[in-house]
Image (cartoon, rainbow, N blue to C red; front, top):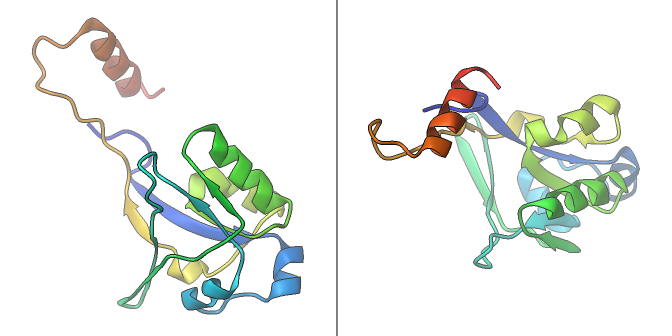
Length: 143
């Protein structure tokens, strides 16, 4: 069952002050010379940053001063980016308020990768546990 926006993007951004000091990347590989704020899965792996434009796909594993795990630490990464410490690459919806306010400046926007939105997978439609049924009905109601 689809949940959330049908199409999402990863966005890359930094403050204007950071970019004025360190330069504005013109190609994703330029990020290798920047302080990048990274995420880390619970198992310890750091996700690769993917970019795509006109059939060219670029995969990067940049380094940087901050590595966070999912959850509340994502807010720390966003706050750190807004404080001008480095470049963040995260779901566009999570960065949108800061992009709209001007706190963060989008970079490499033509390269932002699109992907399908999230889905809820569950086993069958019969004999669903009551809490799961309530959650599914909540989502279908447009919560």
